[in-house]
Amino acid sequence: MAALQPDPKRWLVLLAVMLAFLPVALDMTILHVAVPTLTQALGASSTQVLWIIDIYPLLMAGLLVPMGTLADKVGNRRILLTGLTIFGVASALAAFAPNAPMLIAARMLLALGGSMIMPCVLGIIRRTFDDESERGLALGLWGTVGAAGAAVGPLIGGALLEHFWWGSVFLINIPVMLVVAPACWFLLPRREETSPGHWAIGQALLLIVGMISVVYAIKAGFGAKQPPAVALLVLVFGVVLLVLFAQKQLRTAQPMLDLSLFAHPFIVAGMVMAMVASGALAGVELTLAQELQYVLDKTPLQAGIFMIPIMAAAAVGGPFAGWLSGRFGLRPVACLSMAISALALAWLAVRDFHTPGLIVPALLAILGLALSIGLTSSSIAIMGSVEASKAGAGGSLEATGYELGTGLGITLFGVFMSAVYERNFELHSEIPEGLAQQAARSIGDSYLVAHQLVADQGSEVIAAGKAAFSMTHSVLLMTAAVLIGMLAVLVFFLLAGSRKVASRHH
Picture 1 (tube, one colour):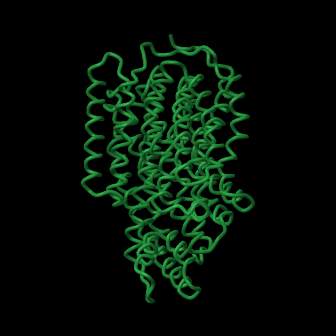
Picture 2: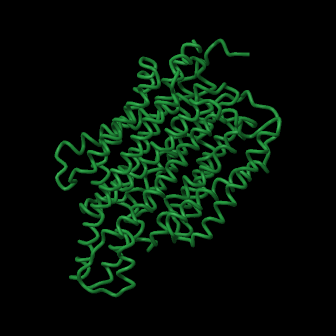
Picture 3: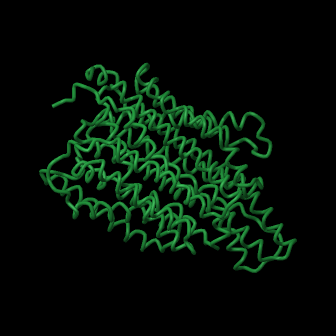
């Protein structure tokens, strides 16, 4: 039975779930500006730093679909409240982690909490808003919270690091949780439509282990952290598990993930857009935060302030995207937003950040606006193509796109960065071989090595590092521009006929 009367509390429900999503979004980027401080404080190696940042989106990518389908079975409210509790506890553990391995473990727990929160938020929005134009607006507002959270992440991180130790970037989640959990408890409907049948834990494990193995193999292979044979073995193992999972889905009467969803070109387009755009955004932000602090010697707070244009514009893009796609159709809005992002990135690649003038902030704002319009278009494409009973599954699919994009984006950017950095790192004086090799790994390593040397040699290592990183930064931005340009063309073909489908729905 379709709900004829819209829920009178629907906008309050939207407010509650948007608040619930805020800390998850904050945690995507709050660490970006904290990386230099954290690296020095914990004496973390470049591999450990990548894991500290990456384990969160990596694990979430594996957990989102199982958690989304679990929410469809037992109710979004219950899973959401459990997720909020786990997230709060994990935040406290992360804040007081004494070393890098403990911090990585706490981030794993954060990912478990986050993977319960994210699909529930999208699922609740899909079930609460039946009207298509209202749903577009609600998804736009939700996108704003995501973009604004990811946006203020570096700023809040910078401000906290100015006055407190690095653990404060996690501690900030706890007061948010203390407000959000009671709000969700009171506002969310106790009675929910759930889908029948049991939750297949075996299928869930196949999917989780398969996803994580594949992503880890890509990370380890590209990062040359493992011998190629080991990476290949893990990749094959992951792919085999995912194939088994897919076979199970096709055979069973009640699949965990309805693979027929992928027959819908809009859902494929939405997934690809979510992955590439969020990956590029995460990689660019991480690179930018390091460029500003290591090369331009800005404090974490100054780096956060410098990044305000990309953030503020991203926050405006969400609701704007809902209105634009209603007015002009999804296809032109999605393609144009991607094309403009690509141009902004290419222009940024050739600018000198030492003298930003007005052009660099303007380009950052254009990039933030265009990418967030693209990301919200991906939500509209996916959530408009699933019926309400599959809302959790649809939401988790999209969220998986985001997380995979972010995780792989940071990985591939990080790995690519190391390779370009090493190629451009040139020292003219003699320093011990082991130290020279370490210094050429990343700019964080260059600083760690410089502190162990006498003043003149140390400053030469830092100067070589800065020169290498500026070069790396340009190559990276240009690569991201090309990727997003190619995405614009792909989306143009995938979204063919979007007008026809829209008119058929009305």
